[in-house]
Image (cartoon, rainbow, N blue to C red; front, side, top):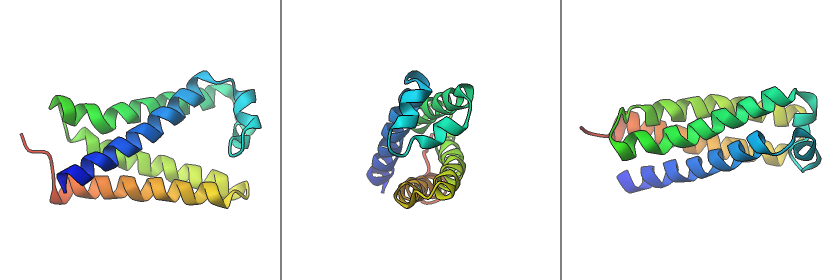
Length: 127
């Protein structure tokens, strides 16, 4: 189970890092032109960049606390925060009529819920 939870954390961290770097460093106008990125045209550039930075921090929070042995409880806490982010993303894509993106958000949400459940309950990190 420990390996499965590490894989889930790694997958979520890769998704978060990719999305975070994209939102932080790619101009909003380019993001808006990409399939699934149209929502960025409806919000300010600062909001998009803030989400990007939060996603980069999430990527770090899903891996580094446990890997370094410093406050590993932050891994499931970060997973819960990711769940909240995915709820917002699913609502946004749902309002825009993008069901495939909603499905993808729900998959990420389920993976984060599995990680939070696993690390808070059945396989917590031990000191």
